[in-house]
Each structure stands twice: as C-alpha cells, then as structure tokens.
Image (spheres, rainbow, N blue to C red):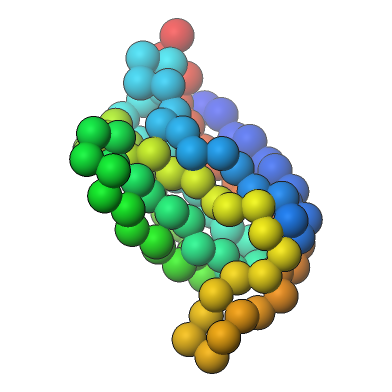
Length: 104
C-alpha cells in the first residue's frame, strides 16, 4: 500500500523533466492518476535511448513496475499544444496524483 501521495498542478506550458524515480527511496510500484486534461507521457529507455509515447487519458492510472519503473525514464513535455491524430490541440490544466511507498 502506498504511504505517500503527491498532488501536482500543471498549467499549459509546464511539464516534468525526464527521470526515473529513486530506486532505493521508493517501493517497486509507482502509480500516477491523471486528472483535468489528457497528455502524452514519453518513456525513454535509459540504456538504449528507445522512446515511446503513451497517451494518458483523463482519469487514467499509470502504474510503473518492473522495467518500466527501473529502466525507463518518463517525462511530460513543457508545451502549450499536444499532437493528436487531427493535428494539434491546446493543452489545459492537468493535475496528477502520484502514489508511492517510501522505503528510506
């Protein structure tokens, strides 16, 4: 069970830099609930540089475990518009709630 919840607000043009959450600091799973607006999250493999975008719909829960938790960096770009199948769409306010288990 998580014992930490972090709530963050992201306005258009704000994002989060590529990172892997501290391995020894937090448990084997990290979950993020996306609220307010959908957005793409970019995953980049720390060793190979392979990259994948995963769309996070409003109300989605992204759970990172195994290789996704320990080998792939994740980030959300700082931009005011996002690509979509019909061109670009304006970003809106997004709130994330991240759940973790603190181990240190």
